[in-house]
View 1 (cartoon, rainbow, N blue to C red):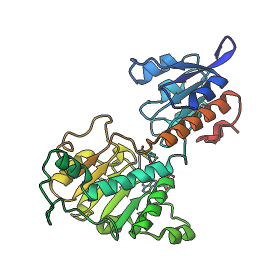
View 2: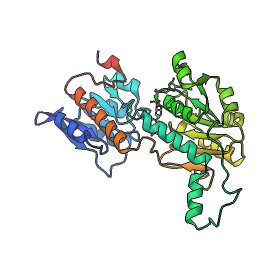
View 3: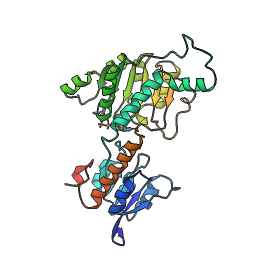
Length: 327
Ligand code: NAD
């Protein structure tokens, strides 16, 4: 599909340098109209005549979009790809790519930021100080929980979960993990991480941090029964995807003091946040920014653009999720 001989690609949202230049060298880039809603029918209309789509996590790329004639590749600017129906893409011979690896450290840093912020009540402390409530040192003021020496439970130890385990070593934490795929013994040893079942992880952890992809199996992986198994002093950290945690059940567990707090970067119905979370001082809320550093977002943009450019030129993109499409 082309205009004046050049292939066309649809850029759903702006990306950072050097992404735009890489894309422009490979194809004619069509920007998705700013005011157009992000529903499948609208995306399909915009994608007509394009061989590729550069998508982001808020774009639903499913059957309606993937059946667009001439579409060859969807390049997602994210490591998670739950917004794309990969089996449907495969059946339409559309390649799907993501951006693994380049955001591991930034995301692991941010999970740790949420651990520290919730444990040491930093957001509450900041507004307390700004409001002029600091009238002098007091021995019982803003008491929090220790991070050093505490037990960290990681649900999922892929690239990002391992990065969090690595940081936990510096805080002398005890690290437990639950993952259907065990770490190699040398990695377990290097990270000082012990594999346990989910029940033990929930029962023993002071911080439970979630690092799984969103799939049918991980939807509501944490809900009322799991919160009931956690310590009353425990804090939940979620930087994975919102629907992995049952948000209504989380609000209920926090209200009932079944757990002590939460640090959240992601939500079940983004950009909506459960109204029950808003007034809670023991909850730290971030607007899905775990990978949001200048260098990481720029590297994600470059990687997604390179995946697209390679496919447009007929090659096999480096981060192909469905290799059966391109043998
Ligand atoms: P990864 O594929 O390297 O690791 C995921 C791990 O989860 C794997 O080890 C897998 O075996 C494990 N897993 C799968 N199902 C599980 C289950 N039911 N219970 C326990 N473990 C399970 O992925 P990654 O690069 O570490 O990223 C993880 C997820 O984090 C991504 O899929 C993405 O959705 C999310 N993410 C969010 C942000 C953000 O901005 N908040 C940034 C980057 C990634």
